[in-house]
Length: 256
Image (cartoon, rainbow, N blue to C red; front, side, top):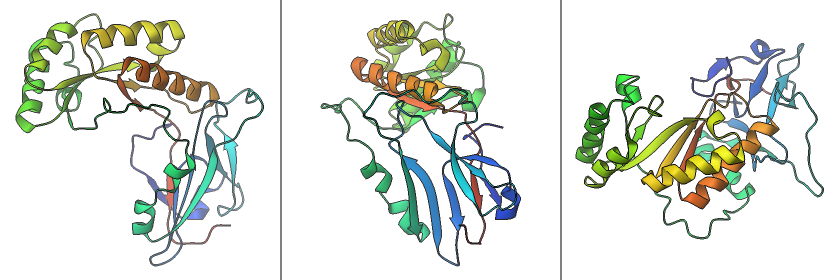
């Protein structure tokens, strides 16, 4: 199962032999000593990396490209690879660490005033496939407004069914922003990306939720980058829900 939307696997090193895992990897080294292996500054000039565990020794790991990276990485010189990061300390140290942020490039967006984190009502989680139903979506907008939440997410099934401009006119009276779901394939070309984000921005949508990438190879990360750049141009805050390879955590034991 290639998915980062599940709970982490807990295992002893010997149980990982021959396995292929995505970052991050959390290792317990002692009573209150932990090590986090992860990446920073991942970009489409290179793609994400994974961890492959030796078939004979679960304590020996090496980095590798994503399992669906079937071609060589294509890059122009000069270029840099993502950082491979190791953070060691207590769980408190790991949680408080800003190392990955500092290793990543600074934002190129000068005006970030329109990027506003917040809470959202999400009808799909509560009621499943109801995103084409105007009555249900209005109910969730009303709920978000009542709770003081900033957003409501219109998930899969709305395209070609729900009158989004009508819903957005409704939400504006209640101080709630609308996010729209889309499959990444609907944004996979420059023409589709610009056409849809320009249209949705003209409606007044404030963000997009992009789903089902199923990969973190170089080509997919390039699509990530393109979506982020286009969202910045159209001032649509974007979040990507990527289904990728399983991560793991390791119980006490030393890794080499």
